[in-house]
Image (tube, rainbow over all chains, first blue to last red; front, side, top):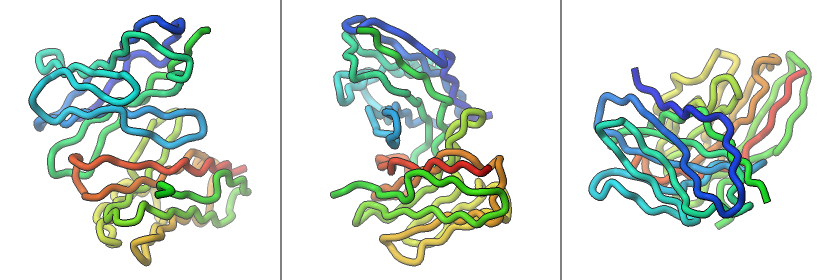
Length: 113
Length: 115
């Protein structure tokens, strides 16, 4: 079955600390992978995406993610978290040529001053 | 561009009433999506339009739900009659194309509460 798992529902980090949000997927076809961020009261905004090539992908706001095929993972990282990064983060998977994305259930990030 | 515009931002209604949610996609985008977000089920695709034509409505939960896209700049999602279990945040999103190569642009959502 196709699925996306974000094992951490909530994560709390201190401002300036590093961050890693986990994402594991199960997908039959070659996956296209995405991370979206949702600020309170807002829609989702694309942070980064991976289609092919270099497995380390850079995104907006200083985020990066690494695709590891052997582990079926696409974890999101940021070396130093800012208070404005507090939001909910969604991992999603799709396939080339399809409009269907499967979204994870999200990880809510809290940043301590 | 103003982005994807949804209205209303909040809707509170009583069970049995008709609810209409509205969406204006980004100009030039030819794909439009309606999603529903709940704590229990996360983000679910309800219906997908391409060039104003409904391509996939398999995610529409019941006949009580209907969606239209009369032109490239407007879409509605209607629930009639509404039920408390329909309470959720409903998002509209648009993109240039219909596949996952294309970035989705989301509206700010409509928070629906059915009492």
